[in-house]
Length: 365
Image (cartoon, rainbow, N blue to C red; front, side):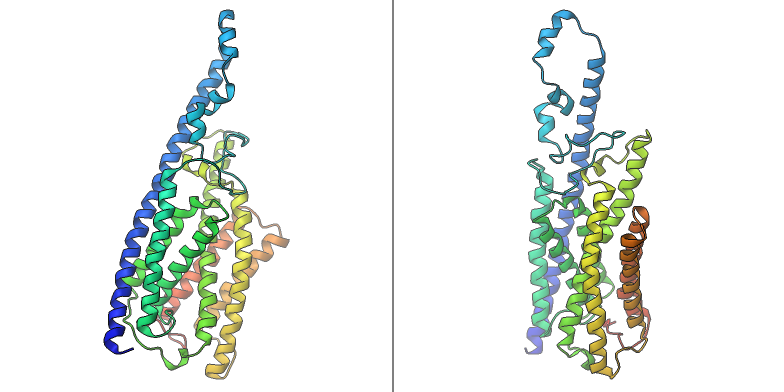
C-alpha cells in the first residue's frame, strides 16, 4: 500500500482502539453494577431467611395453625417468588449453608435467572470486541503484515485475544463473574499501549520478516490470554478462600458479591485445567522461538534476556502443574504460584522488552 493509505489505516485503527476502550469501560461498569446489585438482592434474601427462621422459633396460637399450614416454607426461606427470581444461580437455593457460606454453581453452568446488568455487560463486551477486532484488522492492513511486531501491537492484539477467549468460554460456562476483572485488564492493556507504547505504522526489522512471526507470536498471544484468565481466577480464589474461612468461623460476610463466584475449590480446578492448556501453548512458543532463532541467528539458544525469561515462565508454570498434580500443592499455595507465573509474563512483555537490550529488542520505543 502507498504510505498515505497506510497512515490512514493506522489512524482508523487508533480510532477503533479508542472506541473499543470506551465500550469496554461501559461494560466494566455494567459488570461491577451486576455484582453490586446481586449482592444487595442476596442480602435481602438472607434477611428474609433469618426472619423466617426466627418466626419458626416463636410459638404460634393453635388457631393460627391452619393458616400456617397453607403457607410454603420454601417461599419464606428464599424470600418468596421474587426472591427466587433474583437468585444468582439455580444452585444457590440448593447450596449447603455451612456456616452461612453460599457460593455459585460449582459447575459454572447457566441458570434461569434474569440478571439484566450481566446481560447488558456481555452485550457491550461483544460490541467492544467487534470494534476492537476492526482496530486490529485495520492496523494489519495499514502495516501490510500481522499486527504484532512491537509492544503497541502486541498489547492491543493480546487484549483482543483475551476478550475473545473470555467470550468463547462464556458460550459453555457462566464466567460472567470474571467480567469485571478480564475487561478491566483489557482496558489497562489498551491504555498502556496508547500511552506508553504507541508506535506508528511501519515495517518490521529484517529479523522479524519471517513466517515464524505468525506461528511463534500467535501462540504466545493465545497462551498469554489464557494465563490472563487463570490469573483472574487465582486472584478470586484467594479472596473466596479467605471469605469462606471467615464466614465458616462465625465472622461477618463483608464480601457478599463473592457469593456470585464459585467456591475456591471450583475456581482452582478450572484454573488448573486452563493453565495446563496454556502451558502446552507456551511450550510450543518456546520450541518455535528456538527454531526461529536458529534460522535467524544460526543458533537455537543464546541466553538472550528474552529467551531466558520465556524459559523462566515455562519453569514456573511447569512447577505449578507438577506441584499441584503430584506434591499436593492445592489451595492458596497453588493460586499464588499461578499468580507468580502471570507476573513473570507481565515482566517479560514489559520490563524486559523496554529496559533490557538484546536481540529481541523490538518494542518499537
